[in-house]
Length: 249
Image (cartoon, rainbow, N blue to C red):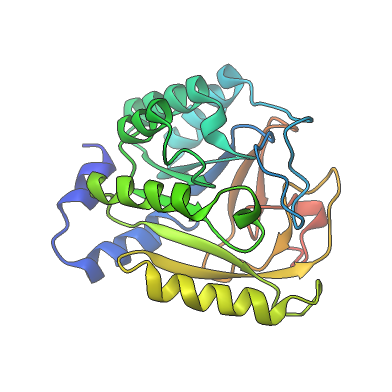
């Protein structure tokens, strides 16, 4: 039985979260479908012009082996902005169904008013979706578009919807107060979504990093499959290469 069915049928929310903590920890892999993004946030190196995409056949071989070894129970489709690659998202979801693996997605929610991408989201049959929302993404995805995405997600009954909000906790960009206030507003506005504060830990934007350095304290060390390197790398945050990882696991 595909693991998605188990989570969808869980009646007790706490039991569901307990199951999720096992599935979305050491047995999870984040697959970076593309480094291309339709936003250019100030705390991230991704942008529309320069990008890499995964080789699906190589990823299929790698994931199949990891599944046989019992190392992977869930795959998180990530980017860049993964929904810019419809075909790859559909292929990865089909592979996950074949292997009996859960599937989740991280997106900036640009597609709230885009029928084609809304249908893609629906057909992915996700156990979890995470929307990136903070003052940095606000510059590229307006409130009406983001709210349209939220409303659409609510119709899909996805068990564990989340919002990731980057907060300048250490005041690296002199934006601690404004980012914290925005995070607080998100918590009040989006009931039914787990709003997770993601502290910005360093002002980094380099070729070896797949995004801003952040402290993902909620998660265990996990695997990440990078579009650029075409390999699986153990990482403490899911966003940086092991050799550059601040925690040096």
